[in-house]
Length: 386
Ligand code: GCO
Ligand code: MN
Ligand code: MN
Image 1: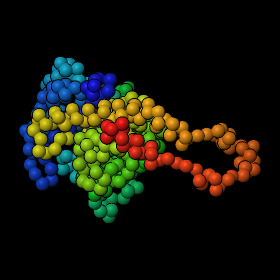
Image 2: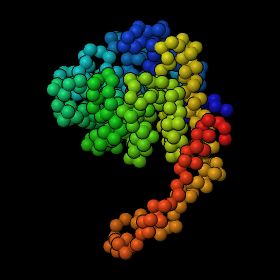
Image 3: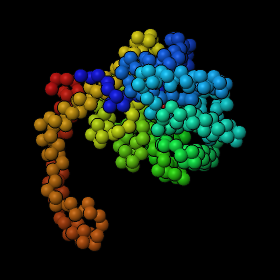
């Protein structure tokens, strides 16, 4: 019943199931698998797509001949398994050249290298079928604001995205960009910290229609924000181009837990939102297994991400079909149409009508709102007793 199928569009990054368990305090706990092995692992667990950073696939110092061989092998693994590449991205964070950022580095040569690297990575992604290109600016930021002018940094960021949009148009690629906000880690302060910041930034670009967002559960939770509200903002703006699903307690370090594993109620509202609006993009899991896991347990992790999504999708359908929920929602949203003229917008007539209306403040303030009942039904559904 909760088997993943291609139509669910479940994808994983090579760096997610390929995470070797390194953390700031310890060495890897798992041997690295090759990209080809990871594609087979994803096929085995029932995923639909695989995403990658340029250097997850092609090492940064590979020769052109090595690159071509790697790409050939990878394509063969994709063909053998039916796994597709919906999204690609650039590693603009690992190498020391990016220690002070890529597009926003204070060094013009680093900024130019970041552009060149991204152009090559876009070519690689497009060659393998990607239609979404993600920009996660993990190193774009500061520890001390003495070191970088935020206005200047945003100007550099904007110029870089404008240049790359123009490149994509010039090549005739079918590719959309998705900016991925994050408040901190690895930088003390990262530019474009939240979904709202990214949306505001997009409005200042040369080709805003080409650029959307890639919100991530963990990133908004690190900032203590309501992720579903952020996703709704992006969706309402027509900008929900991609999504990174994982889990994370508020206020903790970047945990990247299995989807739905620590805040399942929040995950429920998110899945319900995505399914209710008919979001059509990838359901991308940007998470990794515990450092204590071996590869059998990594598979359990990947299966768990998809299983939990499908369980919550089922719960959302149950919530929507529940007669008592429906009745409560109808009660809460009761509308006799008396004020629907306001939805037509401002007019002198509407203004006069509004001014002439007498409101019974006491009666309106006494209105019953059975929200506790509704919330408990939600929990009963989630806990499986209803
Ligand atoms: C993180 C980010 C990254 C990006 C990835 C793709 O916190 O490290 O979520 O995993 O999603 O670089 O752009
Ligand atoms: Mn993340
Ligand atoms: Mn991410």
